[in-house]
View 1 (cartoon, helix red, strand yellow):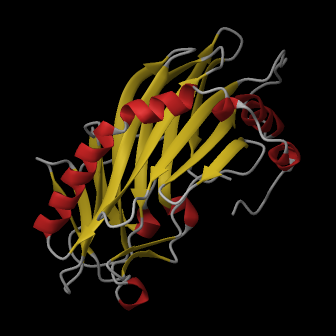
View 2 (tube, one colour; view 1 turned 45 degrees about the vertical axis):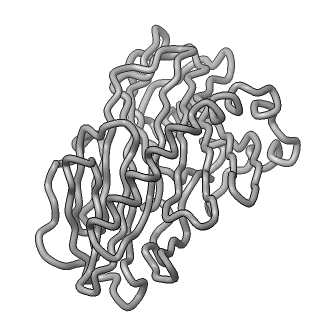
View 3 (cartoon, one colour; view 1 turned 45 degrees about the horizontal axis):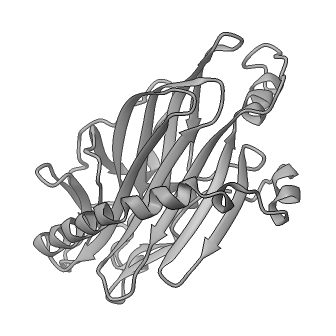
Length: 286
């Protein structure tokens, strides 16, 4: 359960096609810190099995879709105890971090904007918080998935992939990235030994992915982190960047609307249909 993009096209041309779900969405890392647990490092991919991710509710519209889910800290810690990674803990109550995703996919605009709002509703601090945006582009789909090249435009904070047909796919957040990376898909690593992207690009053609990272010092209890990501395509680097700049300007205009939705009572009520699903130990997280 989580959030990923299955397919993405630009004017009928594939930018993402048959990529692994965990390589088409946001990842998170932070250190849980509290008196009873000490400091525990956490790495979450965009797709994690229930009950680590608990769905709260969803709303799907023609232009805006909204997803609300919880990172279930209690279940995550229980799994660490079961795996012998940390000693046994006494869980007095369930602890959560709430994640809101607002996806703007308006017709006749050359971009998709997705807002990510992370609210710490637990008693723990989230130290050294990072959000990573990871996308395994397949420029031109199966015809060209393994001959992509990559680049990073530092001025506009846009990372992108392209092939020799001149088709580009790329993305950028409205918050300035702190790190970037492109590499062969099979070589992508975020773990306890490599928490930061390398600020390097893969040289040459290959089956590659692109990633951006935003580091944030700490999300204290009851505090919030928010950003938005714009994804687009283009038939040149210049067209891609102009599309993304337009999307970022438009995203800024929707911040108030997103924040109003996030704070609404209806958005924070769990739908009954998800209660049983959240109790399942799912292996297939589609």
